[in-house]
Length: 238
Image (cartoon, rainbow, N blue to C red; front, side, top):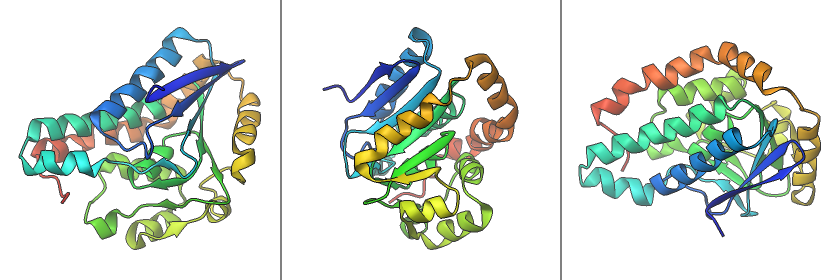
């Protein structure tokens, strides 16, 4: 089974992540970006649904088991390359020329939750799993691009609370605060996500143009404002 794979259902491309916790490391990021490129360039899909084959975890974000040893070895080049690659994941998800739906099959923590904010819509299983930013307890500050993504998807009052407290939200709480479109039982999640996606049969050209105009400030944060933090080589991760 491939780390990341896709299938087609009429005009919907369904990307499934098969790497357990789907943590971000160079191999996973490269695999996902390769599949996303193939969907964009080799299919006529108009909507993208992304989910995990793991029924407990959607994504737990950065693979600290990989990154911490790299930083401790002071391999700054590898660390910087990783953060730029992660930003490419955020950027390409945000600017995908299709409407995108994250079918959150379980926990979305840290970078995984941040990444889900780059999608246009989010549905989440209601019977298990939390949505959480634990960085405040880990001592890891957000990059400007990450904060811009959070502001896109989460009301400011709730974003501040989640950022400062590291509180865990259930799917029902996420729905209440309009972070996700719908909370669904795991048995219904993909049917709900696909049914929702089938209503979004929009032309790529207009979706692409809307995103270019809507997300200009987020792109600036990812492409420009993040750069001095990454180039400094000072990563607050231990």
